[in-house]
Length: 433
Image (cartoon, rainbow, N blue to C red; front, top):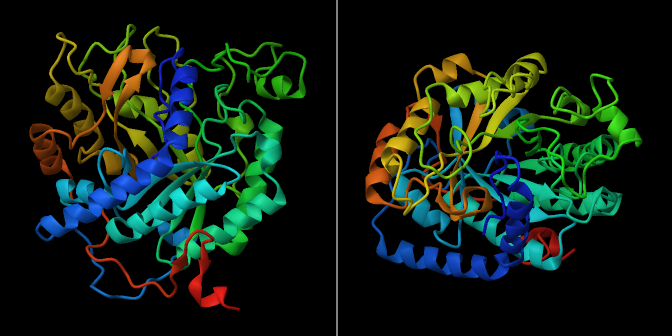
């Protein structure tokens, strides 16, 4: 059911993967029904789920402010789950914990079908998770981000908050990559982001705005219909070194930043694809690879990615924002017949993320979300298994490695003050007025 894709892809595969994502989103309606029914059947058969958390049974839902969504201690654990393959309940049962954050992506403005699918997701998150990381994609372009559409979104988010589901609104992610209709248009993007942020901050106090560019290796990612064109104001704005050209020496992040008042969280997808092309060779990640990408120290496969800015230092420390690793996982291509084994690859990656030193070195990282998906990746030439709960061997090793500093969802769902009325998202308590 999630339409969210892995953003940290090698150059050349993003357009195809984006197209795959669109297909996934278009089929989400049928997927949602199947996964929801499967999850209900699983609940009837499975023993009681033991999960970490502090909320007692039956407590009233409390709307946290956007400032309170970032934990003072620890890091929120999230999942970007293929709900067609596994319901959120089943995933929580396999993990032994309810995820603190569940990712879901929708097109914007929302159609009635989009709203229906989103409501099903919110209901599952309330029951089997806690918070929602909502990717909002203006697939019809930034001109579609009208006051009317933004107000409708903010009203929906307010209802979700009242229903006990905090929301992180990840608006127009990958705005620096030209594989999206909202790409490489810094002025229009900033205007649209600020418009959404103003409405969300005013009407949905239990929601926070997230700004999430694509990892800068390979920037400016030329070769798409959405490239910034020479001679345009956008091209000039993106030419940060003022040499008349848009190259890897230009800052891939700062021209798109909407400002501290509009942005509550910053996020980035950091996944391991391999050491060098061709991708999909089942390689073990080098020590420190994950943190090098987060801080811009990774030289990349060609040794020319060093100009990438230190994302964590600039936007986490200098701008004082909470940082989310919105997707992370390590590539394993089943049936490859060569290279390292699945456990060695994935364990080498999650060991970097779950090390005792990670929260010490990066105290502003407040969310990490695992990419729990098996799908075809054009860049890797076939199916890639990003998951850690698909097989007992990997699942057992992963769950035993979860550190104490991770925060999960509460063991029992809270009792909301209102109920949601499908498909309008209007609280039933006010629908009769």
